Image (cartoon, rainbow, N blue to C red; front, side, top):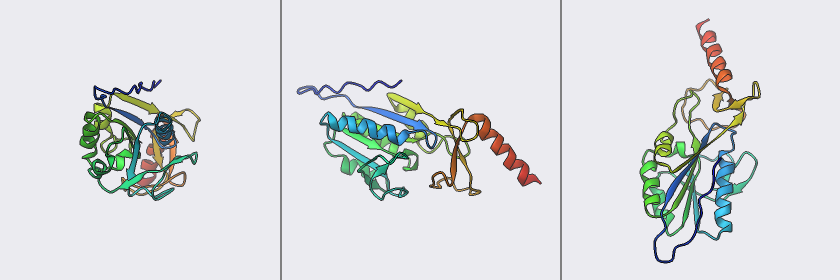
Length: 202
């Protein structure tokens, strides 16, 4: 269970920064948890700034929107380095869909945390093949806090940690929702992969 760190303001000593990573499969509530933490920071009257990859336009061009239709305004950026230009004097930085950012996102998050900011990152830890996705492994490695959230398997109802692609596309970056993906447990994910291999061999 994740316990949010205290945010006591220090008037003389600069506060320390840290990185929090929220990871999991599609439909596991990553963005929902990111929005929850950011809203709590707003209630605490902290200055926040939120970013998302410019390529993610599924729900809204600018806003971050969860599957439950909760939303929060953000700045779409094409490159992770652009985050440093807009972070300014904010105290909390949020990043959604971190797996879609380019590799420098790891160094960017490190710089922000070293500058005394709380950095909250949400993203898929595995791609549709069940392999570590983008820079998420590195971000999880340098983070002070890692929270893995889970979905419900669409086949058997067990805890799901995989994003199963329903499309035949081999593109690694393929944005979609329930029309293209299902949350699946390990067993149902592997059964699906095995069935597809049998079909291609026939």
